Image (cartoon, rainbow, N blue to C red; front, side):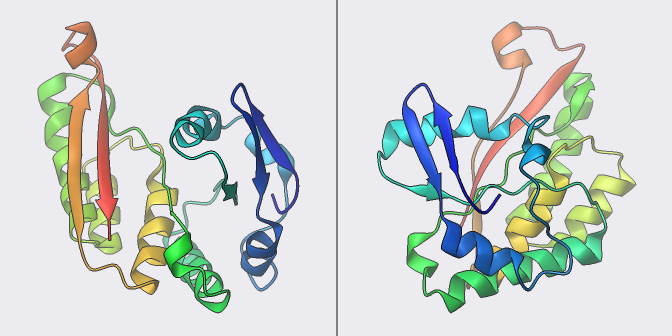
Length: 187
């Protein structure tokens, strides 16, 4: 989306049209499609958290349908270039949203998730693809994570850190079928 506002119970969040258009116009892969967000729930979860901590900010919401690795890498570079061109490097927060492994026994989910997390910690998109496909990791936000890593590296990111990792068993106690969750910071 390149124009408009998103409404949450904490108020409105405006789309940064200048940055959105700078990203989408030269891209061979991205296109304007406000309906693409109808089936995606990550922003409705993330925006209130961001609004709680910061009252005045703008967003560029992007949803990915393709899982073509080469395209995702290119999109990440394009986003990084757009941010550089507008001299917004120190003003932009890139967020990739994803659960990790879905509905597997906890020990197995943890093993799989550590493989994907390890690749992200190394800022290694190729390794992430290798781990996700090789170990059939059901990480729903694989595509945005590849894009985010590419954009972050284009902007000079050199390291990552794991802030927290948990599974749904930490809340429910049920270890027979869990979903994994990880928080990482790239800088």
